[in-house]
Length: 472
Image 1 (tube, one colour):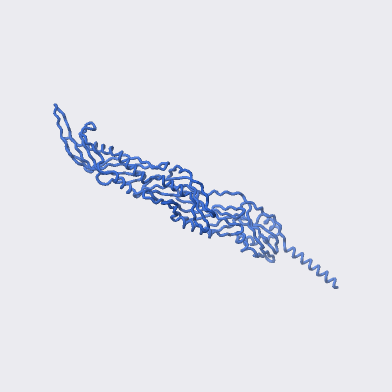
Image 2 (cartoon, one colour):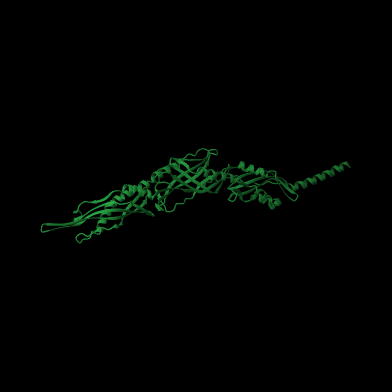
């Protein structure tokens, strides 16, 4: 009888073992290959603006300082074909300037002394009568300013007429004074000297090449944003653009831009090459003042897996009487996708695989896996052998933890840039002013070491020159 009991127990244990084995499937799924495609992300370029300005009133002062006293003198009655005229003209009051677009207009008030009359010879007798009289005249000139590709500013001054402020209306022996002739003489005589004065004043206030050279050299030097984190900003200038010179509200303004690639890096001070010669200026009516600072963040797989282990290892999922426990999670890259290698115990033993495309959520500044799902080999197995895992909420449970916040890094990055680029001194009299207003991830690259999101920081950046002449 004892032998019969032993036999019965063996049969029962065998049956139980069969049922247990049937309830605990073992998974053997082909692992997705760990493959990383070479990827080169080309940083976006943008334009750093700088503006030179001059007050029209300053140029007016310079013109008045230079253009003084006697401006025209004709001491002969016999020149100009025997015109019987002697004329002197003095500056009377300040020369006034106005400007619209690239045209400067001048008004030059003059007081006149005129000796006019006639001289007639008949029968060997000379008859003459001359009178002296005074008048006032305002000459008008206009100068067109043109910005050239060699960084010079050329000016072309032309006569623009005149107006009599006080007409010399005295008649001499029945002959009117030829006021138009007098005015034209003075106007043409002063055109050359006035043009020279204007040209010199414009060159003094708009000698742009030294500012461009200074910007070209200093922008090429790495900028330390944070010594503790060894965060650097590098600017690689490649070309210059400029708007035509214009004036508004008495301010002559010239806006330029340096085409540059702006990047940040972490580590030792970046090595930059020696800047080449100053390139030719490209004249452009439209210069975008929005700049892009290119940056990247390295997130190693060790950090990603540490977070996954913290939130997923030891977690369980059950469906009816069946239950699995997550033993480990390992994340790696495979042809542009991120794979979550998940080891299970319980009703389903072995390793299954999820995959998704890394993406960025602009709302909360997080990385997540778009189109996260079971890998194709895992899906085929589960559909046939463990539909309760495939159809249940296990995938969503894993997906919720496939999220990595970049908010701290982005916040720090924005803070450091805005702090350091607030009147950052590049050189004596040259500062860099900038502010980042918007950050976004433009590309994500997977490598053997981890995941690298590329960040574009949008904002404004400009070079400011401290000078008594042209200035920001």
